[in-house]
Every structure is written in structure tokens, then in C-alpha cells.
Length: 166
Image (cartoon, rainbow, N blue to C red):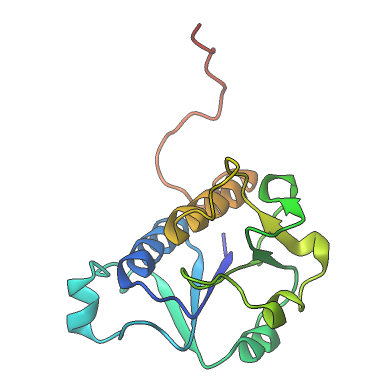
């Protein structure tokens, strides 16, 4: 599965650490767009629990425009103001999943680069602002990977349905 996860100006090292670990375990490629709210030196990585960075493909980019030119479509933006639920999309190999900073999400200029049907949201209860960034990325990446029948996963997990317990 070569999904591409893009974090635009991530601010919190432990969130990014969780996402690095997620990408290492699912085979997704992580793209970090500067500015970052933390440093990527060895000491900082260890302190933030980012010790999976050697097992994941992580690329740092100067700008969104650089990533747009580098990565093909389809690209999907995730926002609490999305016009379509994340689980209504048919994801494929090479898709680009774009998430904003923890405090502000994606800015208006970045969102404008996406057609409305490519601005996706995760459902939440009314009155809540947003999900934690690492949790939102995990939900979406696992949905995309599930749709690809967990291609490349190890183990003998059954794909047959288990009966619902009543």
C-alpha cells in the first residue's frame, strides 16, 4: 500500500510520532510540510517517542506547492468543514491524504486547491471541534488499507466475517 499521508505544518511531536509509527506499520509514506513545530534531530525524535522513523519513509518538504507538484492525484483534504464523509470514498494505491496543523487545520488557500468532493470529514458528535490529528490519520489510513484488503500485511488474520454476538 503506497498511500501518501501529508501533514501540513504539524505542531506536536508526539502526534507526528504516532503517525510515523502508523506509517511504518501500514506502509504509507509520510510527507511533512514545513514549518514543523519541533525539530527532527535524533535527540528530539527519541524524546518524543519517534523511534519508528527509521522504519517509515518520511520526507520533509518546504511547501504545499512542492508536494502538489511531486504527488499525483487523487488528493483528499481532511477538514471538519468537509463536504463528504471519509468512508464514502473508494481509495486506491497512491492516493494522497492531506491533513492540517493541530491548532488550525488546513488554511483556506490550501483547501481551495481541492474540489469540494475531495474535501472529506470524519463524523463527530455535535458541538465537538475536531479529533486528535494522530487519531484522525489512523482512522483514514486504516479505512483506505482495509479497502485494499490490507495488502502487504503480515499474519494469518481471517478475512471471513465472525457472527455478531447478541
